[in-house]
Structure formats: C-alpha cells, structure tokens
Amino acid sequence: MKKSITDIALKGKRCLVRVDFNVPLDKNGKVSDDTRITAALPTIEYLSKNGAKVILCSHLGRPKGEFRKEFSLAPVAVRLQELLGRKVVFATDVAGEDTERKVAEMKDGDVLLMENLRFKKEEEANETGFCKRLASFADVYVNDAFGTAHRAHASTAGVAAFVKDSVSGFLMEKELEFLGRALENPEHPFVAILGGAKVSDKIGVIENLIDKVDALLVGGGMAYTFLKSEGVNTGKSLCEDGQVPLAAKLSEKARQKGVKLLLPVDHVVAYSTDKGEHFVSSDIPDDMMGVDIGPKTAELFAKALSGAKTVVWNGPMGCLLYTSPSPRDA
Image (cartoon, rainbow, N blue to C red; front, side, top):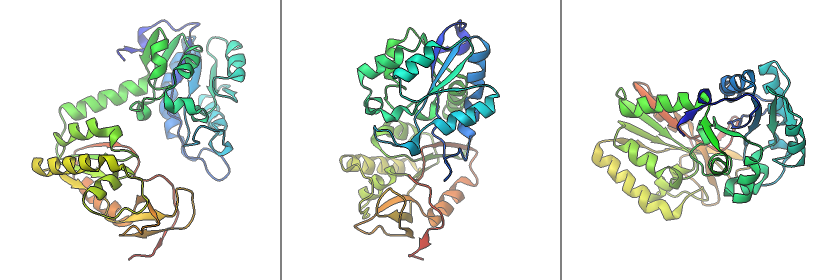
C-alpha cells in the first residue's frame, strides 16, 4: 500500500476503514482497555474533519462466523463516541441491510461502526462475494489495522482488489515506519517476541528475524509446535503437526546463528479454551492444553528483555485472560 490518507481528496468520499478494535470487555460488557481505540483516533478524526464519510469495520474475539452477543462491537461504539466527542452510528449487522440504510443516510464527516466482521464466516475465508460486498460501501479503502494486516481476510486483503483507491491510515504508517527502522538498523541487544496461534502464519517473519535478533522469545499457540519438535508432550494444545519439522529446522537455524531461542518452561493449562478449571504446570497432561505462559516463563522472558535496546513484539502469549491460577505444580 503506497498511498496515505493525506495523498487523496476525501470530501464526500465513503471511506471504509479497517481498524483493530479487538479490545477486552469487562464482565459488564464495557471496554476495559481502550488503547487500540485511542490509537485509531488520529486517522478517524482526520478523515472526518476532511469531509469523508467514515465507515469503520473491525473484528472482536473469535465468534467463529456466528452472532454471539458477548463479541458485539456495540460497547466499542459507545466508548469510541465518548473518545471522539461526537456521535458514532452503530450498524447492527455486517455489511447487511442495516449497514446499507445507515451508510446511505450519512453526511460528510459522519462516523459509523458496523458490527463484528467475524460474525460472518466469509470474513476469515476471504470469500470473494463478501469482499465485493464490503467494497460496495467504499470509494476509498483505508487499512489502519497493523495488528491484523498479516491475515489474508476479506477486510484486510481481499476488499482492496475491488476498491479504486487503497491507502494506509496514520497508525499503519507509524507502525511500518518503526518496524522498518527496527529491522534495518536495530540497536542491540535486539529481542523479538512472537506469539499467536500458528507457525505457518509467520514463517517469513521468523526466518527474517533469526538473521537479525540476539534472542527470540516464542509463546502463544505457536510455542507448542516448537515444543513438540523438541520432544515435549503438548497434550491437547494447539499444535500444527505438519509444521513440526519446520519448527525443528528453525530452532536449529537459530542455534547455528547464535540466537537464543526461548520457549515456555511452564504453562497455564486447562481442559478447553473456555474459561474453566485451570492451573499452572511445568508439564501438560495428555487431556489438557496450554492456554498461556506460566509465571516462570514470564520471569524468563522478562530477564531476556531487561537489557534489550530494541524489542519487536508480534502476537499474544496466551488465548485467554485468567485470574489467580492455582499452582498445582510448584
């Protein structure tokens, strides 16, 4: 994406803006951390002040292609309105009839947020028909969701092919500029933290980083593929069996390069990814799965980071938020 929102005329244009509003909600359904919303404000405010019709879209959580109230973006619309200090219209569907009607009613400068993209299974499948449907609401496509830009989903990749002008927002520009500096001329020690679900999503990233970093800290679901490649029992943890040989190859490459590759030494384990019984263990029982790094791993990672001059972090260390896990394994 070569253009910025500052490079094009915006007045009267419908701007479909992919933001990352995947924020935590508390037990009352209110936004408990609005950092990601705040980060998108400069782009939203610039578009609005320059007369664009600002149509925001995002995902929240993993509703798996169906409507689930606990993953609704309605509370996000409320918090966004508070932060912007102006009305934010909320469309109760995903590029459906309600979105169509409310977009048609928009005036220059108005802001609309549509419902959670992942309520549609076509979003993660990057289904062509859904890409075209999203594009039908856009004269300009703006990608300002750096945290999800690596995913080939309809709203992050496919839609751009069906919109005349595709540009980056201010947050995307800022992150790319920082990442470029960090990778091209990093200060050492240079430490990278990689998390998230899949090794296959980040093969290129890992291979690139091994040539540059002094230490690589691996957590999240992808850690279990690496652990399995080293003969560690991972129970029912998320693991890409087909990528185990690759993980072993990457680990060996790191050793040859003198890169310190750190994997979890203890885990928060549970029977499922739904909140329920969980505890900390250095081993993963056969009938359980790792869902987060344990306290010993957190200490290990913190020590590796303590002297770092450059840190690049991509992806979460766990899939759930837990409170006070009971240490079954001291």
